[in-house]
Length: 372
Ligand code: CA
Image (cartoon, rainbow, N blue to C red):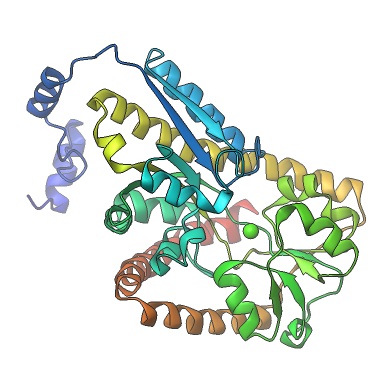
């Protein structure tokens, strides 16, 4: 059914507007059918969730513990989930295989960690100069992104769901100012993933260093700069004590999606009410992590500035333009290497372009002229 402008106003006036695409699969008959086939069994499930985060990691690990608590309470104690930090049950970067094989039932991480196995996975996490949290949620939940993600993970015996977002990250900590692209030449910076590839094309030297060694590496000059997450996590790391300039924006991570994935057979073997409880709790976690990080980052940015000599900087336009140019080259390499990556990126980029037009007219104007 095509909804035209006249119908819209007619319906709206009566307060009975119905949007067929929004209520697909949610008719009264469907509800009656599904409730008649769902019988709550008393069977109890004890599941394991393996994560890429250090144990009890602020917000990300804490959120997984909350997820387990919500599921336990919503299921009336029928599902108990034990959360493991990276290395507690399997090493952080082994969780994908562990859940795929059924050694654990649930994983929580971010899809760009699996780029070596599936290059397209990066597009379900973060693309430099790409979509922000709101746009990623729109693409995944309502724009066809999740269907592609499910298609990819199905090959690995997994079912993915968005379950958290970092929001726009910061550009990182530097001990010298970045005034031009020349200042990136030879710069030794901790910068993983696609962002690292872009930095390398710009003449920088991306270095992969585990979180636990970052502070010492920056303090001792093993690296010149590092990106991490945002003010809350950066404050905990103490970077403001050893680096002078705090740069914005995190051009490489505008809204990194955090994922939850389930072993396919284990998930499909659950009664439908428990499946819906897991889906609902994942969606709640998706919103909780972003909200929690926004609130914490707002507070901790003030704390960093009050407690240290760190100075805020914004990358010059010329530097961002150059990095964007190299990003296009890096993305062309990724999509040329893998047909599925090409398909996913086309969906991603078409959505991004349309979302950009809408945002230019609305949020961008709002931020530029009204709120700030
Ligand atoms: Ca980061």
